[in-house]
Length: 120
Image (tube, rainbow, N blue to C red; front, side, top):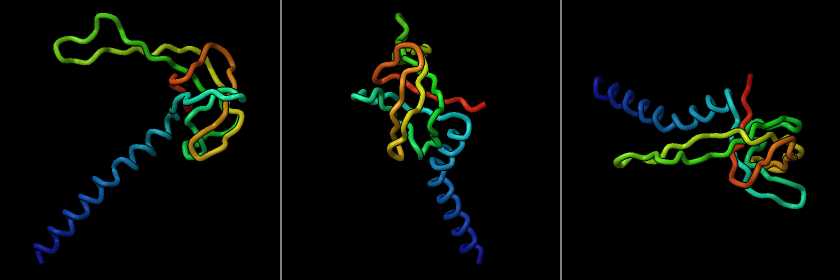
């Protein structure tokens, strides 16, 4: 009986470890939604934020560009990065679980920039 209980506990622990990434995604999306500008077509920029992320038409996303800090990276450590706010985009049309068309509200968003919605 004791062996059966230990095996049950071990299996439950493994199941929780396997589910941890799913829990982390849910927690992260409850505080912010993040993606990137993946393309620009005739209708404007395309972001990898969609229905699966909780996006809705009309939301305004902050746009950040990453920059490598000069002189960073000491003895085996990687370079240091900084995020700079470069503008805002507005979701015009969600066409997929994971993608949406946006229009530039202000600034200079470009492909590979990070888009983010901070929930208040």
